[in-house]
Amino acid sequence: MRIMSWNVNGLRAVERKGFCDWLQRERPDILGLQEVKALPEQLSDALRAPDGYRAYFAPAERKGYSGVALYSRVEPREVRLGIGIEAYDIEGRTLVADFDDFVFITTYTPNGGNDHARVPYKLGYQAALLGYCERLRGQGRSVIVCGDINTAHREIDLARPRENKKTTGFLPYERTWFDAALGLGWVDTFRQLNGDVEGAYSWWTMRSGARERNVGWRIDYVLSSPELVERLREARIHTEVPGSDHCPVSIRLASARDLAQR
Image (cartoon, rainbow, N blue to C red):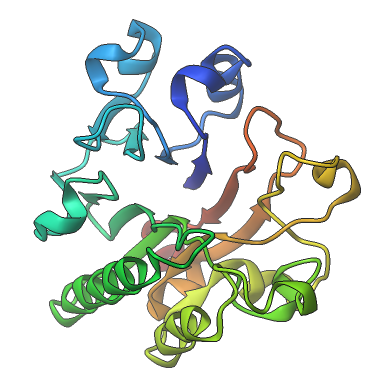
């Protein structure tokens, strides 16, 4: 099973840059999208119902803002929009899909803002999301969380850590969310399989040719609960994919059936 995540920075905008062709070429089993920036009725038929996929949308109340989506070749048992907290759900930040052997969550964590005014809101959301995921684990469920976390965890996760120590996305009290999650057993799948490889980024500012020079940040993640590690076969950052200021990230999982037959 191939699972992908992409902050498209406007689904209608990325459609004009070849998104539908990319989707049909890559054919991920599950794709989580962030920053959809549209209501479902504003999307083309090709985006509302891609060939071979079931589509689900959790838009923000504010038009042209935020929003997450799920395209899945496998029909979930249940799909929930949000985590049950209105202050976060009205911004279209979370979509939860219950599959047979794991729960999949696509998330768009708030940006703290240049003036840090939204950092408290961001930290509140992250705490609520982690609590929600921990409750699922407490029910015996395996969980995969993917999306734009809007935080670089370690210095290795951005090109210029020294210059950005006072920038939202790399503030010490933002990074502690990752420390807490990993301390609870959550797995950063990319680091799990690729180690401390340098220069691995998923977002670049659209100014000054940053992407061409690879002056970026790794702020898009696929996190898993620990029991899924034995099924991990691949974790990639797809820097070759254009169309957004972010690029897709992905994992490949062996099926539970394959493991049972080993």
